[in-house]
Length: 454
Image 1: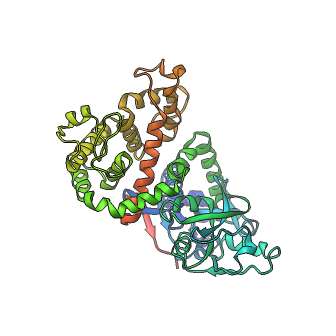
Image 2 (image 1 turned 60 degrees about the horizontal axis):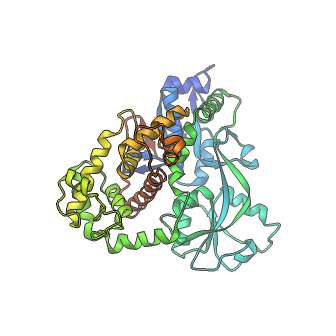
Image 3 (image 1 turned 135 degrees about the vertical axis):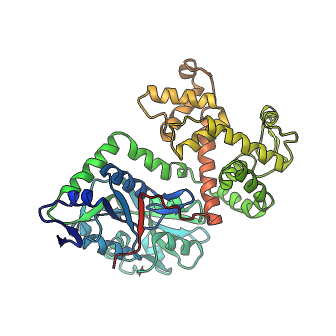
């Protein structure tokens, strides 16, 4: 055995063969909502999902390496201390000189980010009196270097310690004036840091891809290319991107602002009730609270024109089914709503995995189980996956069109409503988890997390 690019390799054995024989794929990534983070239900993030899927395809364990800095990440993959860098890396000409990139899987735009409490700059010449910080050795730093010829007075600081999300937090907290973020990073963080905006785009769209050490052995590179071809062709890549970003498309500043205020002013009165009801029904209380907010904005006296009432907006029939005598009593309503949602979960097809199972159950909570099943039937008829929310949510609005609903078992439904309902709850849920800091580590057996490799 000898050392090849920092990783042990047997003589005449390809990198891919060595990975399979060792039973371990080492992937270096970033700790961020766009790449990898430790969520309440375990590891999450688009890059994690992709890397785990690839490791499973190879039949090996995934080991994640999380460096202390972005520059450390680039050094580690360049020197072969990991097999793959899956970290939302932009393909740039300078990086192509030292790294080998796999197929592009997502396009992003670099954007100058500012705080809406201040004037929006129109171009880079407008920020000369403000403090601009970007992640050191990032593509954002490269962009500013290239823009220097157009804006001679342009000045900025390269931050060697913080990640992009942390710089966004500093802009939100008015510690610095500006940063540059990729569009996917901003859209995820805006729901939490609601005073952030993109002032303008900088340059053309950039492609994101995995990076590998640059060497003559192409075995792993070929496997990566085939992997992305497969998940692009079978729709799995689209579904994974939707899982990460699909519910963030319609950012509503006013609605999010009111939600954040209601977390402080209304939620404390009912949080214990949500926690107790969720615990009794084996649910996440934050998800249950998100449902309650979507239903009534946590108003226990809410009454709709159609007669649904209370904090969980139960119909009279549902309340009777759940044994709720007073729908306007907050505790009774929350208990009834929790039991009803738990019953929706049990009716979801057992072949559906999480988180799609929860999104299907939420849609059923809103529009009824029968209509969701009708949509799943149509989804399958169209050649898509009836077990994936990203496919079913495209079909649900068709239930309002005679051409489609006349062929279904349960007939007409205002199918666009459950789609909006589920996506809103997903966003509320994300914000609640962020505010409450409940993202604790749950490590599955097939995953190892390593600190930065020395």
